[in-house]
Length: 83
Image (cartoon, rainbow, N blue to C red; front, top):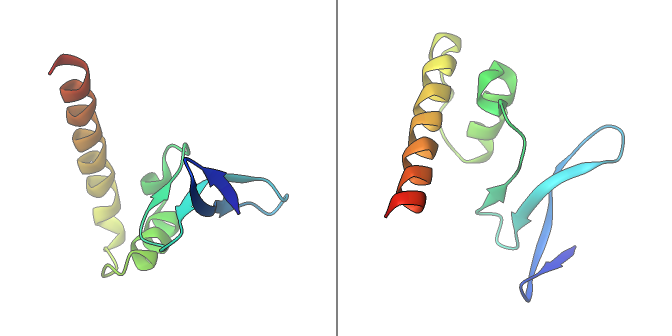
C-alpha cells in the first residue's frame, strides 16, 4: 500500500520486472497512471475496458477510442490552463 494524502491506495499497474506505475484507489474505482499510449494497443485497451466493466471494443474501434480520450484530455488541460 502507498500512503498519499491520508488515504490508502494500491499499486496501479505491476510490470513483469517488479516495477509499477500509478495507483489504484482503495475502493478500486479509480486508476491513475503516467503511462501513455495504453489505448493505442488493442490488447491493453481491451484489458482496461474489461477492468472498468465496459463491453469489448472491436479492434477497428480502438484507434478511434484513443483519439476520443486524447481529445477529452486536451480539452481538460485547456480548461485548467485558461479558465
